[in-house]
Amino acid sequence: MAGETAKTEAVCLDIRPWSQTSHVTKWITPSGPLTTIVKGAVRPKSAFLGQYDLNYTCEILYYLRSRGDTHALREASPVKLRERLRDDFRTLALAGHMRRTIAELAPSGPDAEEWFETLDSSLDRLAEGPKTATGLLRIMLRFELKTLALAGLSPEIEAEKGVFSLRGERKMAIPPEVATCIRNPLAEKNFEILVDTARAIGVFYQFHLDCALDARRVALRMISNQNQGKQADEN
Image (spheres, rainbow, N blue to C red):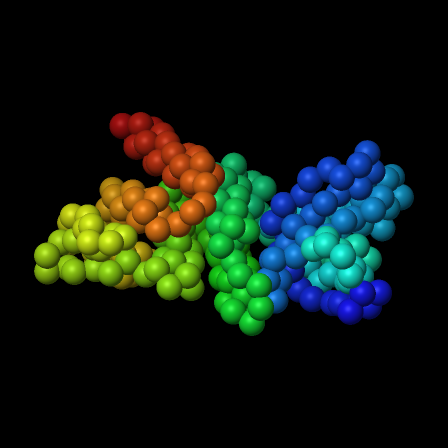
């Protein structure tokens, strides 16, 4: 109810200026998306300095407001900073794609908990896992297939026919190795197969999801360029 406070864990999805000294911050919580105003966030002696940032998982305390969907943040304490994400712009780009996907697709209510956990664990893998192009693509595909499953849109694969179904009666031809990769992307070691699988999932996204794909395209291009650069160095 209005005037009460609520406490929850939350992953920081987006931060935007609200005034010269304040932020509007978007989060995903186990109960769904949440928007808060952080008054005085950038003042020199603000208690919020260093307490939240993109990709952080925080414990937050906020005041519930009776009108509108924007609440007032009272406290924020970082639980996971994931500082290693800042070491490489490719992992940052991929993290941005993940946050944007969750921001656009995650529901409110009890079903949101799995969406929160999916982003939280995927950001952990990005921060703690390998920075190779192959490793990043595996993490990306695992995240995307999980979110599609949560949305009730898991690709229907007919491996023996080499196709998967799109919206309506349309079907897309895919090689058997792509079908295998979709079923278990973490087991795939061939970079080109992972790229082909990512492109196939991208087509699926375009047919089934009403969300922007710019962040995804940027992340995939950066990862592909990373692998090409590695091959050039080896040659």
